[in-house]
Length: 140
Image (cartoon, rainbow, N blue to C red; front, side, top):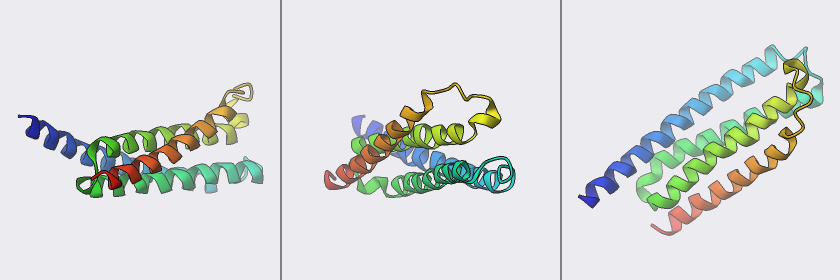
C-alpha cells in the first residue's frame, strides 16, 4: 500500500511540476509581448528593463520546473517536491514583485513600499530551489 502511495505522489509531482511550468512559461511569453508592445511607451527604460528581468527569470524557472518534472523519476522525490514549491514561490515573489514595481505608477500603487523587500525573498527561493534540485539528484 505504501509503495502505491509513493508512486502516486511521484506521478502527481511530475504532472504538477510540468503543468505549472508550462503555465508559467506561457504566461512569460504573454507578459513579454505585453511589456514590449503595451508598456513600451508607458514606462521609462529602467522600469521596462525591470519588467523584462521579471519575464526572463519567470521563463528560466518555468523551464526549470518542466525539466524537474521530466527527470523526477531520477530524483529523491521529497527534495524534488521542495524544489518544485520553491521554484513556484520564487516566480511569484521575485517576478511578481518586479512586475508590480515596474508598473507602480500605471497601477496606482506607488505607496506599496513592501514590494522592494519581497524581490530578494523570491531570489532566495530560487537559490534554495536549485539547491533542493541538486540534493534531490545526489540523494537518489
